[in-house]
Length: 313
Image (cartoon, rainbow, N blue to C red; front, side, top):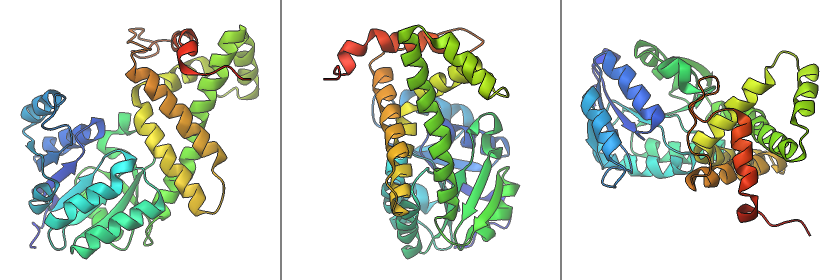
């Protein structure tokens, strides 16, 4: 495969046309980069929003992973964690020799190595990418750790395309391990805040709990932080839970029991189930995002307890 010398002349294929995929597509198209995308929602009743966005930004759509890879100089995989290996397998038959495959999914080191084997056997160049914080407000400039034997070769092209990468290690799994171990803390804190403040709300002690947290950690605005945590988990709990199950795998791969990671995954999934059931609705309080103050979400959780959990014996 003869790749164009300038990365801005590459054709980029994006697998996963959700929030992150659409942001990447917008930023690449703003530079005039040719982009196509593939998503499992194409061909389903949920495809309308994807088609409308693609039309606005002149992004080509296909329902075939292999066809997408066949035309791409760079494939970016940005799907839910559980689909990491599945996407690599689906793309592999179409991956062109020497084409890059950037895996930005939040998956365990073991899953990354398995995905890499699929792409490498097909003659492509697999690079793991670990997104180290929320994509917004950074967009395509979000800090990105690269890993694997082809990471250095992709570093400059990604910078030319507007990304903010750095090479973590030539060994596969190191970048992913960094991301996963960070998530034990970050996603775990989300789950703990939701559990702590919802229970505190039940007992009527939330003001005392927040005051104590503020005294212990004065650098954090706990009211605003709690509302942000509730909002993010209500909005993205399913994706977060899948990531945390991968985090649990990462901890197990280190031969440790993932007590915290597994509990966080379960809490995130539980919140996602509530959101899917319409428990939270949408809020318009501009101070705390569209889901409102954390206490509003906590009250809705408490109101639905009889439908969700069994009382302890």
